[in-house]
Amino acid sequence: MSAVTELTRELVAIPSHDDETEAGDFIERWLRRETDATVTRDEIGNVVARRGSGGESLAFVGHHDVVPPDDEQIDGDEYVVEKRDERLHGRGTADMKGAVAAAMCAFRDSEVPRTSKSRAQPDGANPTTELVFASFVGEEIGGEGARHAIENGFAPDYAIVGEGSTGYSAPSVTDVAIAHKGRRASTITAYGTAAHASEPEAGENAIYRAGEAVDTIRGMDGPSAAVFGEDVEGSIVVTEIEGGSAWNVIPESCSVTVDERTVPGERAPLSQVEDENVEWTVDQDLPPMACDDEAFGQRVLAASDGAQNGDPELVTKPHATDAGWLAEAGVTCVVCGPAEPGEAHTKDESVSLDVLDRCYEIYRGAASGGEN
Image (cartoon, rainbow, N blue to C red):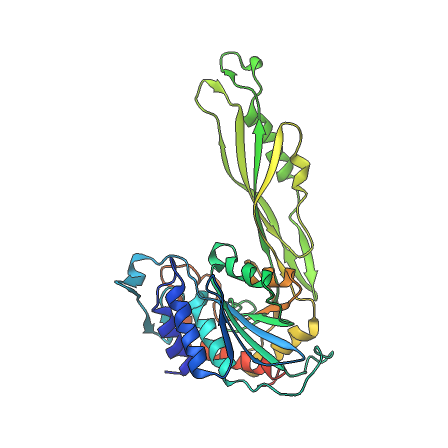
């Protein structure tokens, strides 16, 4: 069993859906024991380690919180972790303690040059002079840890966020995502005047007004954008409706929920539904991500290509990640990690052992300028 697999197994066994403290303790202890890095732990539990200084900084970024496990994924005080069919099974293996473990080992084992360099030249080959590791809390509840870190000065030049990018261009190939969608969740609330249903003309039907707003939304096109020639297609859809108080009462209010998958630089024009009787409230806005430096994307792609037999590509990803918060703050990001589509948050979540080791090599290669 490789060092990355063994570290993944240890980290996955630690429950971190209600409280990330123990998992953060484990990561902090390991970094202090295994590296010469400066390691810090902030007041909400983010773990950050730094090696080197000056010039270009590259961060390996992950999170150690997970969604609640299914009953069969937990046994007493530990999560169940099993090795079967060259995969590691258990809550958090794919999302995303496997990537965290690969990043921890790569952070420890990468050489960090002492010479100062500027940001990557067009060939993307400059070596990193400050290497950063960060594992955040609260990613699964809207990026709480990433936002806290950014508000308190976390600002590397570049970041590789270890969320899943394997199996997008072809099965088992670990690609490099240079963009991903965000998610904006909204509530549209229409107001009317209650009346007895036997005299509908005496009231104003809020459901009808909400229906008009729904028709407007149905006529909207989903946002779209292109990043380095790769298309990112968003969407907008009404997902819930709630209104009325009784079968014989004209409803005075009606609310609909809107799920919008956003793309870099674009949003659907939802303000069009607003008037004196209809209000629009944004409940959550997870930002999309677009890499703003193609040379960096190519640098990580070169490292990915050198770490596997397949032919990785620059791709886009449908899910929001902490890369969105980092990109919004001015950090040049890509997403590259072992998880495959459909693995995260499932009762049979698992990750390929070979791909865990591959991601370790990709991260090391990216730190050295794109070569393994």
